[in-house]
Length: 203
Ligand code: ZN
Image (cartoon, rainbow, N blue to C red):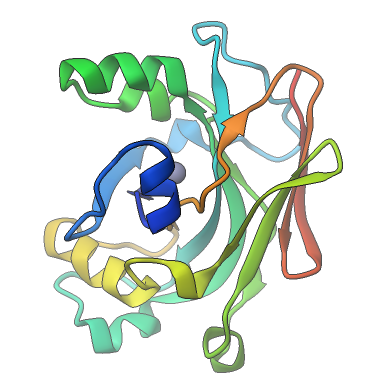
């Protein structure tokens, strides 16, 4: 199983971190060990002093493919969820400054949080999909799939030019603006529309 993540897929978020709007999807990966397993506590990583949440829509790949056409891409995913791409922002800032890869900031153990799955159907896909993150009961991020720079289908077509997609792979489709710091004891809750997808306490 592979975990793909899209960086800078919402203009407002690219701006808030001082990045340019990309001309093609920015893709990075997390290993399987990055996925927090169910009923496992999440611990603040000891190597960071600036842990950021990034709430994202997550797609589940349901068909193997390579060189997928954008027009065909919706046949390759069957479910959606909401997750967190946890980022050690202090580490990432250091790495970015030196032009080094991001893995130590993004791909560490348990840095990918995944909620429950909602099966997709054309009705869901033909409407804006709203999602949000609450920190200790306050909305800190809210997004809408129609504000993505690269749509689900564009992302899949682009990834598949470089990597085979396989059943069970995950795609974190990017975070809207409002990313911010979290601390030990915080309660984070992810929502898809009005449905709670996950909750998590930072230990
Ligand atoms: Zn992200």
